[in-house]
Image 1 (cartoon, helix red, strand yellow):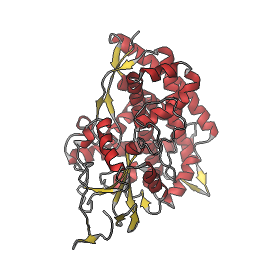
Image 2: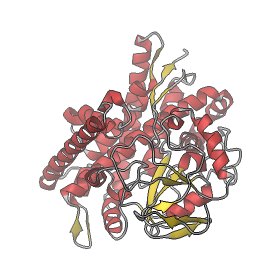
Image 3: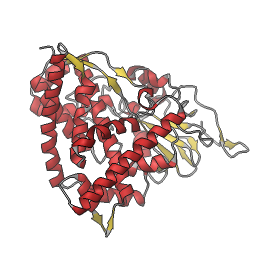
Image 4: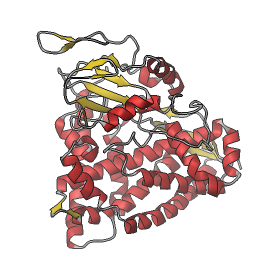
Length: 433
C-alpha cells in the first residue's frame, strides 16, 4: 500500500485490494456493532486502505476502480479540511451517479470553491436570526403535534405503533415544509418523493433494476425542482416569511440564486433535514430502550440534560455513515499513494467509535463531556449548515416525548441495507402506560 504505484496500459492504478470487505451489500446489511468490528481492524492499520468498487452501482462507470477507506478520526478530519486535494464536485456517494443527478440533488455539499463559496454565502444569508426564531417556534409546535399523533395511533393500536412512521419521520417532514413554505397540499407528495430520492437501495420505493432506480430518482428530482421553482417564482412576486422567500431574494455582491440553484438546495435541505433527524430520532429511542440507566439519568433533569443527550444521540446514530471525496491530484496520504481521480471515502460511523478521540466509544453516555463527535462533519468548508436545526428538532422532540410518555420503549428495528444513511425503516414502539 506504500511506495510507487504502477499503472496498467489503460492508465489505471495497479495496486492490490485490501482483504477486508467494505464493498459488498452483505457488509452493509449487518448490524452497526458487527460492522464496527471490521472498522476496528482497519483503524489499527495506521493508514488508509484500498478496496474494490461498491458491488451494487447505480451507474456503470468504467473509471471506477475502487476507493480508499478513511476510518480513523484524525484522518477523516484531515481529509475534510483539505478541500483543495480532496474534491466534492464529482459526487459524495461511494457509488457513481449521473452528473445530472449530482447537480440536481447535492447543491453545496457537492461543490468546490469558488462556486461553493458563492453558493454557501447566498444560502447562509437566508438563515438570519429572525428566520431561526420563527423556525424554533414552529419546531416546538410541531413536536407537540407529532407526539399527539404518536399517542393517538399507539392507543388505537393497543399501546403500540410504528415509531418511524408515526413520529420520527413526521417531525422533520413538517418542520422542513414549514421552513421552506411548502403548501399543505404538496407536503405528503414532497416527503414521499424525497424518500424516493434517498431510497435507491429500497426496492419497495424505486424498483429493483438499475433502469428503474435511475428513472425513479430522476422523476423525484424533476418534481422537487419544479416545486421549488414554482414557489420561488411566487415568492419573488409576493414574499412571505419562509426560507424559499429568503433564498429567492438573497443577494450577495449583486448576485442572486438561480432557480436551478434554489431547486438543488431545496432538495439538499429536504433530504438532509428529513433523513438525518429521522434516523437520529429512531436510533436514540433504541438507545434509551437498551440503556435504561441513561434514560433514568436524562429524566432526572430533562430540561438541563437534553442538550448533552442530543450530542450523544447523533454520535451514537451517526445518521450519515460515509461521505466521498475525489483526489484532485496524485498525492501521498498516510503512506498511501493516491492517484488523481481516486475515490476517497470517509467512514463517519468508524470515526465516531475511534477510541483515540472518543472515550469509551462503545458506551451510550448521555452526559459525555466533551463530546467531539463528527456527525455534523469534521470541520472545513463543508461543515453542516443545518446542524443547529437538527439539534433544535431533537431537543424539542425528546423534551416533549419524555415529558408525556417517559416510559416509551421500542422493539427491534427493521434496518435498510445501505452505505450512506443509517436507515431505520420500521420500528415498533410501546407506550408502557
